[in-house]
Image (spheres, rainbow, N blue to C red):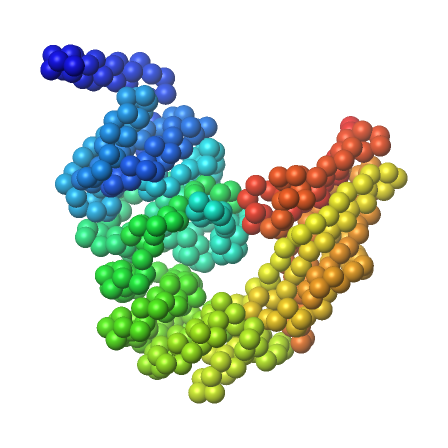
Length: 527
């Protein structure tokens, strides 16, 4: 191919893109959403990331790709995608990290809302439609949805995601401060005028460049709309090449500790309500610290020393009640860390901690779940208080038949997390209507294994109704109710098991596509 031919083709591409941008109905000058994607050496993933945005049901958007000095084929992928879709705009900078790349994208954004997407992740098709719809309906500065993680072999939703996003909510952060656990830039939309009015910026030259920024943004929002649906898919790379998948690295630990300290100080300067401050500390003590403490890198004196001093500092500055919602196994490990008892931490890790605290379970009473991890620890550190107790559950099978009555069979398990499988007996199972009415408990027909149940409900086929399944788990005078979800979908035909009703209509057991949302039993007669 001659040089003249190459130049001519390049000119045609540029002119073609310009014409498409000028006339394409999907590429308005002031779109509803600007999706900002920092790009660095993600040739293998970038195509699917961009496709997940161009395929959104919300079409009124622009995609801002900011190449952060990539040295692989990412620029070629971006150029090819931009040629095919006029809504894509490309920018380039010398390598400076994702923070400055996002800042450059914000500077060029024209949308009413901002959204951030990492260049190896993907958006479910309705993500932006759901987020923007919720933000507009609530007149919210921020809308935040649930997310899941995926690898080449698995897809999963963290338990805490379900706790935060089970139902839609609207309000200020202090009304549901636990939302600070979802403190990542993606999976949200932000009103651009609100964002720019704050005058806040991503940090430069740090791994956790989004802290304390996102905590302050959520604290400043006049209203936050919480969306139950999954709106973001985080990729867990099999080769662990992502900068956020290497907690054993010393630089990662240092940057994380700095982010903790900056966020603590920023929340204090912003005069954040006590409930918000406590919720932030709980996130640290229940989750963030343990990415580093449950790590072979603690064998390094330097690594251990940095983590120990961070624990002493943050435990020392934490407000009263900050540990109340933290389970005993994690409180105990933090106490041992602060006491500089590395050998005991390593012994407990070898015994399965913190993943298997049931080995150390001693009993339960109205005050919570009791453990014995170490004779030198205070009782309160070895007790999971009621606020922190969680019910684990799974729906493993079932069936539905329709005749004079609708007969529904459900089998599953419900238990207190962190307790032995045989600690509690079969739970009490109830059916609750969506209007809040409670149907009397039903007998457990078979306890197939500890914590297991198999029940039969009989319902009126002529009465329109939607029901949820509630399990009451009891142990040693302590009890807790849990609405059940997380169905194992092989028996639900990928989400629903339905039968026709004798006089028209249908009855169904249905699992929401979002596994943290409860399974529902619906009766829908014709007319």
